[in-house]
Amino acid sequence: MDQEDGRISCQTASGDRVQISLTAGTLFWAAITLMRLFLGAWMLNSGYSYWAQEFGLPPAFPQPFGTLPASNQLLVTMVEVGLFDFVKTVEIIGGLCLILGVFVPAATLLLLPVSAVVFYNAVFLNLRTDRLFDPTYMGVSCLYMNVIIALAYVRYYLPMLSLRSAPGDGFRGE
Image 1: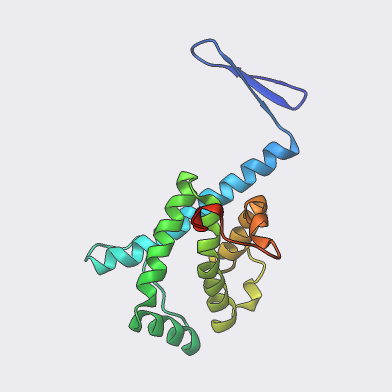
Image 2: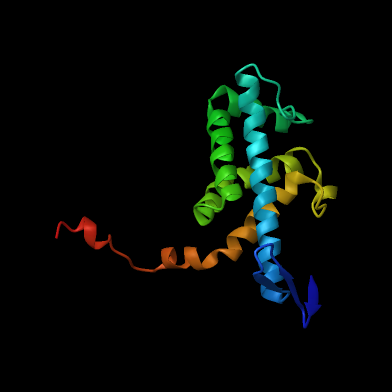
């Protein structure tokens, strides 16, 4: 393994030489990839923990139902009306997409409302505004990471922002 001019190079067992440039772009890509994998794993774990209990298996961690009445009311109501099943399924699907690196722009948008509700519940309903900028608190970090990942994939969303649009050619019956 050699280092020169901000590049790391090494030789593989087959004799091929591999070089990685440590540029701002490479570091940005690595940071986004790590956030994507971490958020995906957290969402997958959260969804699994809920469904594991539903099938009589031990959860990876127990589902908290709020420490204050407003938080508890939100979460219990979501369970009672069946929305929690949907949310936990979305967490599993979105988490898998982020981990596997497939449909990442769509998965990021799919998980954004989930992250926003987690954030709202953690910060405002549980009155944890003191942890608003605590990167170790997943109640806020999941939204921050989700937004950062979405911004990294903004080029995929820009075509949706056209002021005037029409259905594609396949829908005109031509």
